[in-house]
Amino acid sequence: MLTIATSMLGNLGAAEDCVHDVFVDFATAAAELRLRSGLRVYLVASVANRVRHQLRRKSREVSLADRADIVAPTVEPPTQVMDCEEEARLRGALATFPHEQREAIVLHLQGQLTFREIARQQGVSINTVQSRYRYGLGKLRVLLGAGP
Image 1 (tube, rainbow, N blue to C red):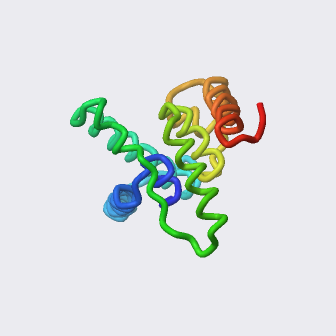
Image 2: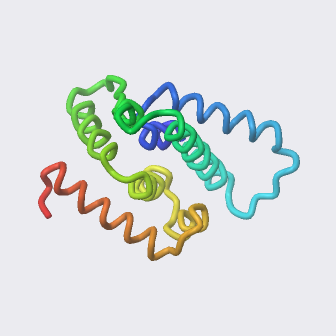
């Protein structure tokens, strides 16, 4: 969940706060929850909703000129240099995407949610989610030099 929040927010500190808040809310309301799907799906959806809320709040507080600071990728140094470089390139590329495309890619690949679960969570059709995902992957191929 931290990976998902970091990929969507582009900031490790903000992602940690987001995941922490989700778990605090979950612990507070756990006895009253009636899950329609699995716990993993619920927690991933909660993280995505919290990220969306943070991004909406930030967009109201910050001018468009300062917005680049919000989505600038922050990469912790992994143990292998190649992984670090690839992760930085991927995060940098994802940071340039519209939020909806970035969210569809991250939730499907890292959150392991189905397109149907993402569509339900975002309140859009499954075709819309699949289009965002497909167009996003196409952009990634171009930006990362993997061909059209």
